[in-house]
Amino acid sequence: MRPRIADYPALRFRRLRRTPALRALAQEVVLSPGDLIWPVFIRDGKGMEEPVASMPGVNRLSVDLVVKAAERAAALGIPAICLFPYTDPGLKTEGCEEAWNPDNLANRAIRAIKAAVPEIAVMTDVALDPYNANGHDGIVRDGVILNDETVEALVRMALVQAEAGADILGPSDMMDGRIGAIRGALEAAGHKDVAIMSYAAKYASAFYGPFRDAVGASGALKGDKKTYQMNPANSDEALRLVERDLSEGADMVMVKPGMPYLDICRRVKDTFGAPTFAYQVSGEYAMIRGAALNGWIDGEKAMMESLLGFKRAGCDGILTYFAPEAARLLRG
Ligand code: PBG
Image (cartoon, rainbow, N blue to C red; front, side, top):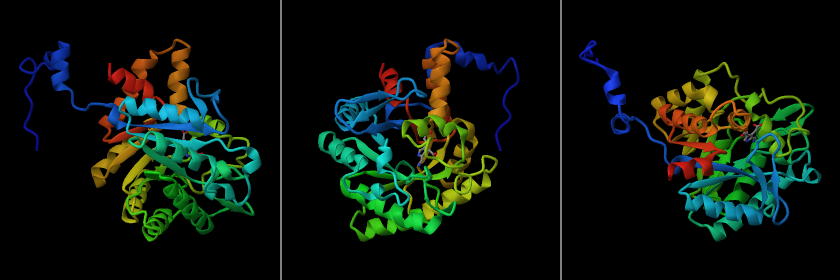
């Protein structure tokens, strides 16, 4: 039980809001560059920096330039970078074989970054959508997304990513049983220290639109992802998914998208106390950036307020396209 607080005028909340010094003393949560994971889009070629139309300020980078980006991120104190490949449509198949090609774009980028900037953690995306002729995260047969066949493919994909030197694997596919299968395969192959950040509570969201443009999956996707991604109306289910993924060997869990799901972040953190992350997704970035570019909001302030909200909701860290910009501001 809390003691009863004093009444006005003994209690005036404005006393501690009067000056920056008093506000700093009374501040409950802080945001720092160490809380940020930077998602980046990669593409083939050399010296390529290609703007993503629906995400102003975000580019697809060729491997040589993503290495430079990783160097800048490390210098800013950003602990991790997360790679998303834009795959040549010619490499997309129904079987998604390119996903476990040891020399695919993502694996080449992992090796290049780990060779040049070993101190930054490299996180991957474990899902078939960039490689799938159907645009889905799973293997499709007769219009049905197959769970167990997809898990087998994801295991192959995870193993080559670990082999390439990934520090954190990010299964984002929402198939059942994938965390246990990947964890078992990693142990058996001697990759005992590769971490898994499970996209445990990933909702079927309209806020992923710009991302699908960025990785070139929008055109390919037939239908929607509602048979594997979560119903936005559900909250208890998120807790059951997180519990399941932690029990199967996830080291960290993620809630995605971010801002419309801060209640889920709080419940997950309070219930399990596990390392909890939120993904401020492409549509969230586009809304803030788009409004700022139109002069409708102060973009920097809105960015920082949105990121602080994740810390207040109990998150240990945030995946955000704003990472370098936010880190620069936080470092003054
Ligand atoms: C797919 C994947 C998606 C995102 C990350 N991994 C999109 C989807 O599920 O369709 C979205 C990220 C974002 O919108 O920024 N494996």
